[in-house]
Every structure is written in structure tokens, then in C-alpha cells.
Image (spheres, helix red, strand yellow):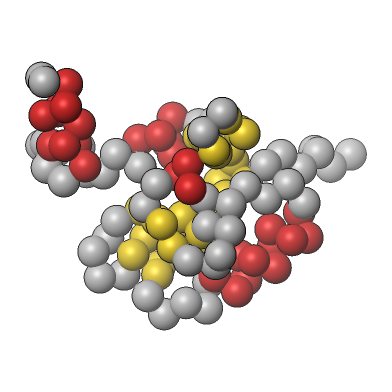
Length: 104
């Protein structure tokens, strides 16, 4: 028996910057998972993924599991939570901003 479909977001990496990005309700790429569109129907998600994969400015478009949170989609797996914070070799970019906010 197939598993029931759970909410998904479409994620990819921006080709030029390498940032993790998500598809929003308008079909635009955003860098904040909370702004992403959460798909609740498999057929709609698959069709949107096929269209998103055609975008020449992204690489590795795929569906990722999310849960519907108070402020928008949230990751359900540590891998996606880790991906959205950026590279982990030293604080820079998104991590640097979060580190600075923690010391205010």
C-alpha cells in the first residue's frame, strides 16, 4: 500500500549563488522556507516540480517534506533544516547574521 502524501515544498539551489531556494505561491524562488508554497496534493506537486525543473537558473529541483507551521512551512527532517542555514565550515552569510543576532 502506498504511503499517504504528506505536505511538500519545492526546493533547489540557485545556480549563480548556490543558495538554497524554495518555490513560493507565485512561482517565484525565495530564500526563506516559511514563504514557500506547501503542496498537499501529489499531482499538483509533481506538475509544479516538473515546471520548476525547467528553470535554467536553478539546479537540483526536488520535493522536500514539510509540516504546516504557524508562520508557514517548516522542515520535518534535520537535513532540510541544515540546508537552509547554508555552509557549515565557518560563520558567513546566513549563519553570520544569526550569530550576530544571538549576541545582541
